[in-house]
Amino acid sequence: MDNTNKSTFDKSPEAYIERLLEITDSKYTCLQEMLELTNEQANVIDGDQIARLEEIIDSKQKIIEKVDKLDDEFEVYFHRLKSEAGIKSVDELKTSEVKGLKELKKSVSNVMGILKELSDMEKSNGNKAKKVLGDIGNELKNINVAKKVNSAYGSIPLQTESYFIDKKK
Image (cartoon, rainbow, N blue to C red):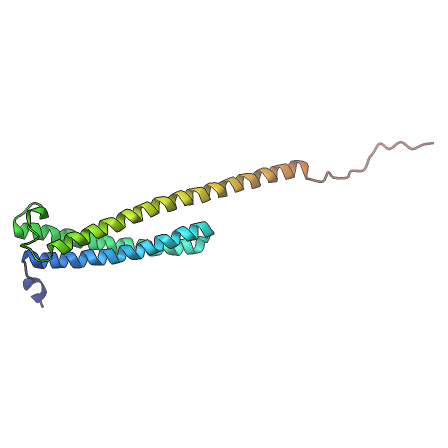
């Protein structure tokens, strides 16, 4: 049993901040990937490519799962940092005294920026998708109406023989 990893972890604020920075950078990379997929998703919605849209959604779901794990890990280390440093908020730490804190704040700010951009794009894509679905719904209604009209007026009446034909004598 090798517990060296857990027992030798440096519990200094700097070590926690370094790990938080690594997690945040990984999250940023995942979000950049998601942003690219969301851009592609917008083009696919416009191009009406349903199969590719499903692939993109599956890829985005996998990224979301990665980001969720990173968020959970961030939360654990963030809580430990506050506990070890005896603080309630990171704002209580001075950026000049704790190495890496300034970079962490900048990295978190970058993540927040890309999240806003993603949110805006997702709203736009959602509106596009609703419009496409609405258009498809209207087309289906028109097809159903055309079928009804066609069955009512377009059917060829059966030619029946007349039973009461008068013959001239």
